[in-house]
Image (cartoon, rainbow, N blue to C red; front, side, top):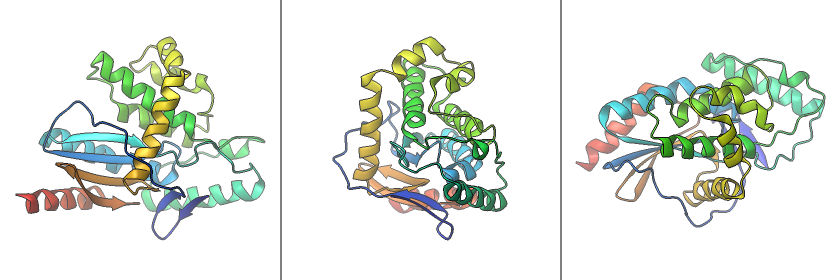
Length: 242
């Protein structure tokens, strides 16, 4: 069951916690900031500029920044009906009003659409692996994540189709290699493990931001939040640890 809450400014998914199975990124630092989101989560798109600012702050301060996908609507399940489209239209209009982020209407004019976020999440995980293996510095997984968000929410394109990612891969990844990895059983298992890790951390609402130190995780924010608030909370946690 998927729930979008106007008051808390989150999207959430029901689910039991599972055993953690992910290792952190290869960058070893005292603190690790975890951003848990879904490229097809509307509030995650709403705070995209905030997350970009947080990532830049972490980079400047030598703090590792790790993006983990949450699987908001993995597998789909919501019939593409007029009531569901009306719900999305109202929700997106509200988020645009609150955050200023743009939303297009082309997607909502489609007769059919499977709101399955697993392929988009798997695409992000695939891109992350390729970026790490190729040691890219000019194209990050957050860049890929934001490009998926824009193409979905503003341009109204379908992230469940692999061709959706061709133009995004042109920013720094070989599309043919991307497709081979994206469609592999390995990547399907890997993205499922990310979903399970999120649940094991007690996270089922997106966006969520955590900070980790020596295996101890502290929740910084769930839902819409300003960049200044996030950085102040992070600095407060680090100050108390000294």
